[in-house]
Image (tube, rainbow, N blue to C red; front, side, top):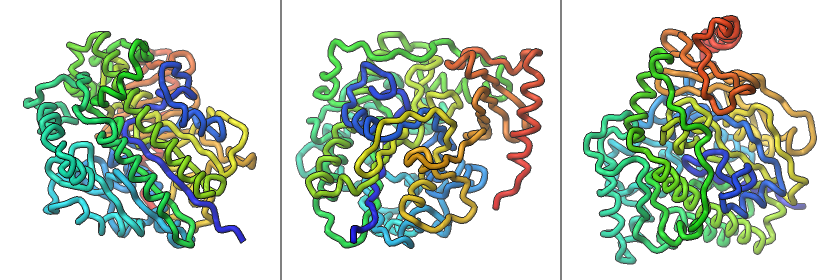
Length: 477
């Protein structure tokens, strides 16, 4: 009797949904992600529940909205007693392993001397085996990656590169007076390609797959730290894009800060973080070239993981899912980073390849990121997760009856975006005041804020009454 299928979940950090060849970007070199999409289902309208690392990942692991799990920032963490899809998978007989960046714990105030000491936090959430590598910058919390750099005599070059980027202070709220390099800087990391964090991380995942010999089916979460900023893919990776004109921002129109209510303060902060005033077309091209090169490094690793599964005879007995925690603005509206409610930051890639593959399919229906763990539970025949908001996507993949959504919700720093098939309404959560309205059918690049347009007042009123107020008036389960 053949064992239950394995599950390989690959999660990048800050990979926007459109930087893949299969997503329509002809300049992106992503043959392995394109292969996954060619043998599976690509979901084109997937919204993360919070365009910031830990809120997004907390929603993913608990299958709950940010307002319910309470992890609003990167300085909070999921309670270890929380119900999670990981615990459900273990109950279903899966060996759950974490490889790479999980980002499910606070690391700013920990007393750990090495990231390995934080493994019990991840075990408490449902991982049976932990190989946490930490963040892209690891000067304060050593880990297996920095151990490797030291062993190869590369730590000094890495440390200087990180220090020169001056990632100190509160870089994500615009309070970073020590920053010496602009956000759009694309200076390569002075390391050989195989020593770059994402390439090394991919090799670690391949080695784990090659050595896995347990009887239980595995669930492997492989977390890459890239293509998160800084945009520092090594020269060898960037050279692939020599002479390539990368895709341009969806729109370069800056938002009208006087027309967005209290949300204007957040947009203003991210204009500062983005060094928007000095962001030239050439700077954006350089950033996007380095960003795409980092995506290609991850794509290479995905291909090697597929090869490792194939060599073990497990490729046709493994579900492979590729996604990211949130997106990246990459120059859209003169912004970089995330945290805002534009599609560049909120929309994430999602590709699902079933065992043995299938004919390619693109699903344009609304999907929430927390639908992914709900799908994994159905694949594994795992029990429900208490208070889950997720809906399995398996109906789209296997030709069954899908569970379509009419609404997706994203929250961050006191603001929330409510997206229907046609409209996106951004509101101040405390005041329940509308700040932005976009007609995504007529204006897919989100250039025209219609929230003050008298002709759209009935639309705003209807969305507030039927979606926004009911959402915030429903107590957490």
